[in-house]
Length: 182
Image (cartoon, rainbow, N blue to C red; front, side, top):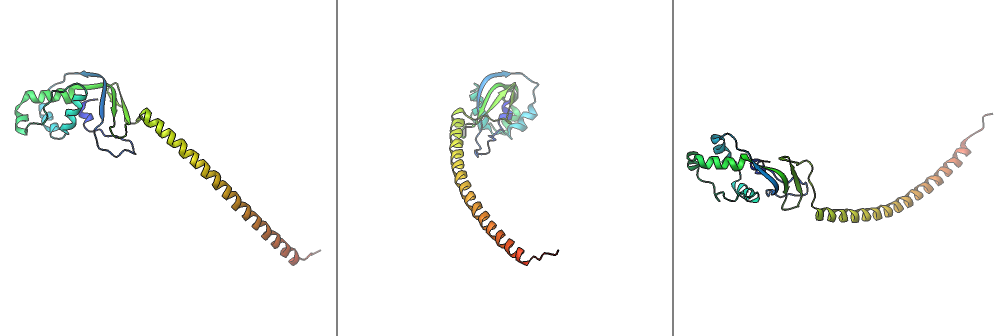
């Protein structure tokens, strides 16, 4: 995963509504130098969240970025600055590790340089709490269902008793009105 990609990723947990960047916990980071793309770098630097980039670079051990982005004129005139930004944004790859949401602690596995956003993992503590809550909710639902079943059974018995008495009453009237045609 390149830091350029990380700059745009957010937690996908439906219950989490935060817009915080995901925290990088790298296990393996590599750098592969690429052809200079200076005009692309000028363009992309105006579109990224530079504060998120600085924090991400620190998380993977590259803490030497300036705290603020220089002016557009300085960026366009400084080839060394643009190359160093390309090294951070495009040439640095987190190959193994995780991305973790600071709010809900959901994490996403990075394997072979690819973030698996389709299969978020729950924090073990959070998973245990959710399982406990789900079990309690299930017990409560089961208790409520048993009470509802008893209510339904009582209602159904009353309905059937009422229905049977009406049916017997209708049968008596039907028999009285019926005439044997033999």
